[in-house]
Image 1 (tube, helix red, strand yellow):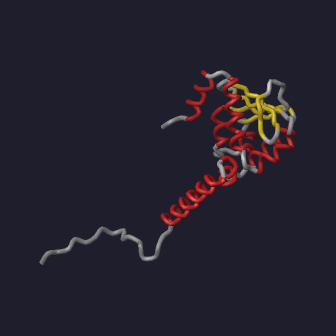
Image 2 (spheres, rainbow, N blue to C red):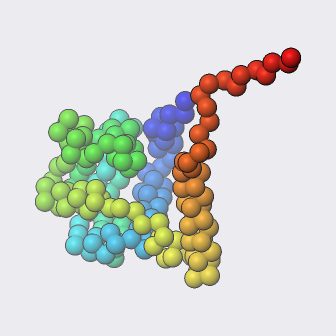
Image 3 (cartoon, one colour):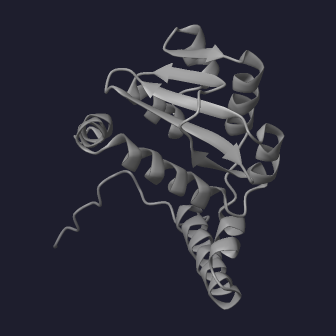
Length: 179
């Protein structure tokens, strides 16, 4: 099986930290397009946070600005520390930040209030795919993409629906006897 954290860790060790920061900021800012969370990030404008994956090791610092993030060389207001696999589990929502914190697998240093506020914003983020598509594609294309998405969801729902009388017998069919 493919181990995402091991492959990602190798890439993090080989590529320069400035590239990681830039790609992370670009990716997060792209994902934030069309999301209500980008408006709420204004509550943390000017705050800086550092993400440290000590097992890799790598530390990336960002500043919240204009509803997104940008790389920063200034000291962080809050520092999040965890193993890379734990950060990946958080991003994939396989782990809860509070659980990792109380298991001492995630630490928060610095301004506790800022860290808690950022954690709560990210933890409450319900990704709105249609809003993202509308914000990144021109109107005609976003309408087509939305239509395709709706059709795919409807087909998926139909394929999962059980229709009365369509149950297959769990017994093997009896062989017909030739007489």
